[in-house]
Image (cartoon, rainbow, N blue to C red; front, side):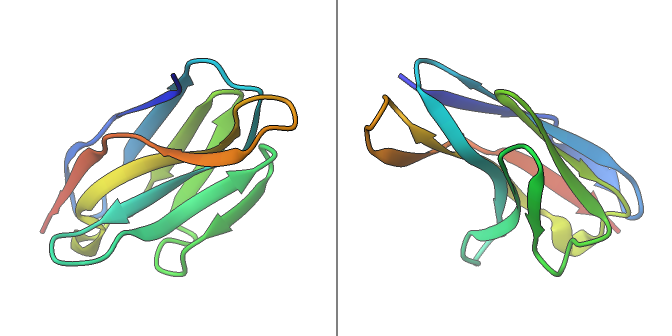
Length: 119
């Protein structure tokens, strides 16, 4: 069974930095993309950044220039710099995975890691 586990969340001051990590484990055939989403209280889950084929990146406008996503095989990272109070949210890792050759693609999610940015 595929599993995603995030780590690195916590409390950080405005203007500070934080690095989130996510590791993918289990049996699968191929990874298409991995990404980070976030959900603040009372808001819908939104895309923060994703990375395809370990090199094609996409960022939400609100984090572009401050956050950097990177991937190394079954690990994906989110380097968060110059954080703001509005970055406070639960951050979720996701992966679009093909379970077997010629099989279907499915999106898997981690349990989330809390990030709190203090003023």
